[in-house]
Image (cartoon, rainbow, N blue to C red; front, top):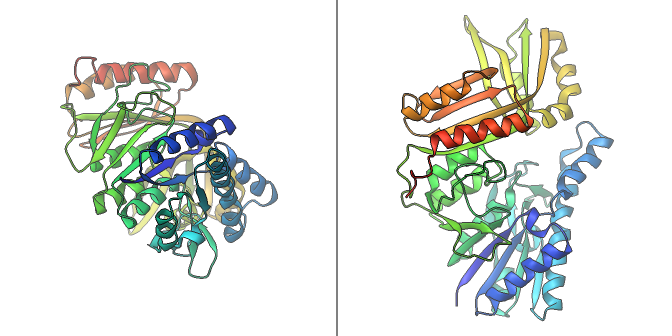
Length: 403
């Protein structure tokens, strides 16, 4: 018998048929005598819909109530999965964060887990129940619901794996493990069967579709091995194993990541408002990149910042209201894409030269070259963008290069 933590993302429980698939998967593992704790995200699209409801009522919704709203997505999915399992004859109990005792700080939207009680889970497992836990959420010392960041169910699963001393932690998603590129876009993306924590952390930092980077950092710190595989795949051998062990590749490049729907903000200010802008974005949980700045005497001035267009649309009015009096000029270029080639000491390698050759005819607004990889902010989208990604990936990862 093994104690197994399983995490199922939003696409895994996207509709009733998907929930039945997940329930069967859990039943199969439980039938082998395993103790199962399943961490479940909100169904695909539910969190975004809840966000849109809140934003329709307020430009900047009250943070406490916003978290209370978002937590309802996971409450729905864990209850539905538990209902499905009980109907199959499997004893299952759904638990929300406050019932598990997932204590966090009081920072709404991006709270940090401080401790996990877990006694309720232990008691339910001892009584031969499958336990279904709501991911992404916690409870503050004040008793308020909190959320632990986008993709936080990964963090919930790995934190529970550590607290409960799990024998295995299995992350299920809609792709067959980690690849050298997004397999939904790149035709010849290759499965990485084994990868170390540090390499995966670097990939996830640039591509949050893989996993929440905070969850990988926790796994690295506590040395919690885990696997990533496809919920709906019939081949259980196709997966990525993540541990402290070295990778299974010889290439200096780990992978090619991409982001779309970005914008580039250019601003000229009369005063040093750099710190104020950064604090504004942090307060609104907006990630930024490609920051271009200049120093005048002891002051730091921002010239350009790139960020997600959806995030900026939500805060644009408040941003202009807060900083209008300091801005001499302000422009926004939308519909941009970012390409990152993640690796080690590749800036002067043959792979870098191949990439530069491919990018020679593209409209590059910003670029960064360093020992940890190459990054490009480009004005290209749609099919042309997919073609560009495939060309870069093929140049960096010839079919024969992997073991």
